[in-house]
Length: 273
Length: 296
Image (cartoon, rainbow over all chains, first blue to last red; front, side, top):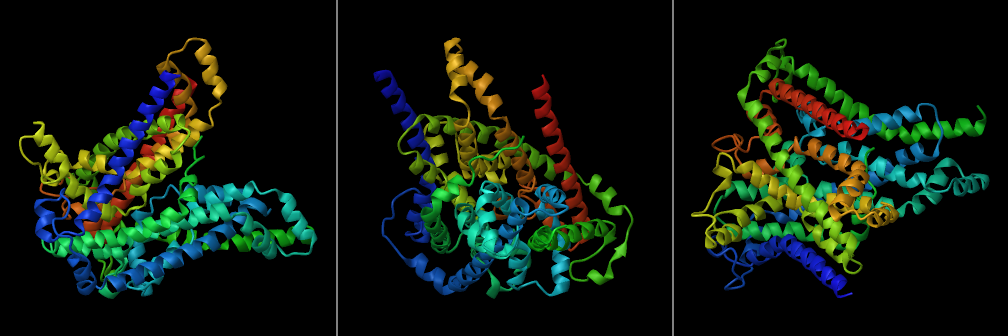
């Protein structure tokens, strides 16, 4: 008994030390955001000597962070909404409907996950350039509206929904679209929230996309704004940078804490044979 | 076909349409365009003035030492990253499996780096690991380091340090995948082994590792595909040359520099195609290796 207790003690100790190592950088970030520039540079690890909100004031005044928030939210929310609708439609077809060519379609979708999309950025750029999509929300939203990974996740979940529910709905005279909307979608809520969180997070945190396609300052997203603060004024106005880091991170942490149960579950039960 | 079956098939096609359109317009078409551009001299701003140059770009990329340096860098990085993150995430998963209380809270905390953007976390990490940050301060106070090291400007340290950064950032996803795998292993296997007097290490190598194979194959594949495309980290940390010794240069950073800084999209497309071929070869070899392990 004491042996077991002792063992549990060491296991908990290791896990807690690990979690402190993971959380420390966030504490470090938040503490530094309340310091002035010279103090960040010279004493990064100390508690703030004078708690200051200078960084927060300046970053909102000088860098139009408000507008960046607006752009980021418009893009992330649209991409998330479209993915929930479009990816779940495809997943429904793949899991619950019979039609010739379904097997092939599924294989192509899985195969396409292996295409490294970032390699397509050169031809995609010239394509969007020709279409006049550069510096628009469209370029960030439309190409990201559906994803093979999301389709796969939702399909795996929908397969487990018993067909009896669908048969009953069809016997009641519901069309396929009504069955999808009134029966299958509500039952898929857990996986749909997972997909929503993952998509929202990826869109919010994306740097390469905005970097290529959004060059007009009024279109900048938060990540692009961070990059600009870091590269345009190196070594100076450090308090703005650390305030900006904190401000851009907190919303996503907030969303995560609300929905973390789904998020963590999204990654269980994945494997390749 | 009965009317009901025909109706179902029509709905099936209609519902699949979003992905088919996406696949044709945003994957297949750019991929074909990339192949076409790899045979051209073509600029970002004047795509109409494209000029056919045959296999010129292909030959040039093969002979380009900077391209191969960038490939070496990501392979160097991945070798360290994949080993470190494997040990950390499997270790924590094994520990998490043993506890009954508080697991949910710990998992939530471990996920904080995953949800933070690369741009934010690399800036914070750079400060933490820089000469005035706590890590080097501790190392100096216990005498491991004589003076501060600016790793981004060093010849060999950039990639190992970035591998540690990425291990911190991404271990939680692998940990959860491994934990899911561990929990699905039949406990009777362990009980039988214990009756036979097998040591902890024997049980680990003969039961745990083989049973986790699907998860290990999955995370390794994803690591290779994502790691070979490393971009945001090095873009935030280095100039487009990847630092004074090109120690932070990755293929995608190089592609970005060629395409959008030097406006040479033909060359950049060729770099992209070569990188894609390298990724395909690496994942295939990795699958072959794992499957050979199975037949033995």
